[in-house]
Length: 50
Image 1 (cartoon, rainbow, N blue to C red):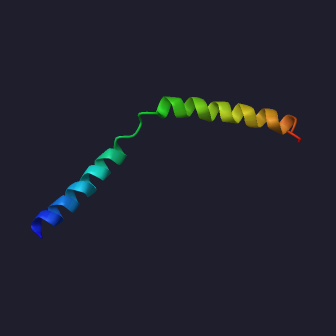
Image 2 (cartoon, rainbow, N blue to C red; image 1 turned 45 degrees about the vertical axis):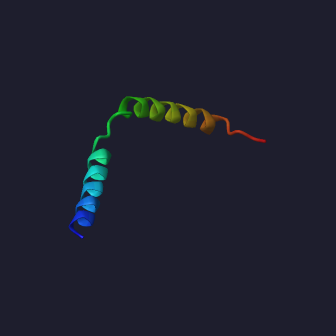
């Protein structure tokens, strides 16, 4: 029973550490966000039909 609890706690701790290790794609996401804003401005000027 102790081994099961330890294993579950270890899995939870590993998942938390992995989720906090973000920022790896921050630069790319910033570029994509900028591009999305530019595209939205274009589409507002002339909406796509069809």
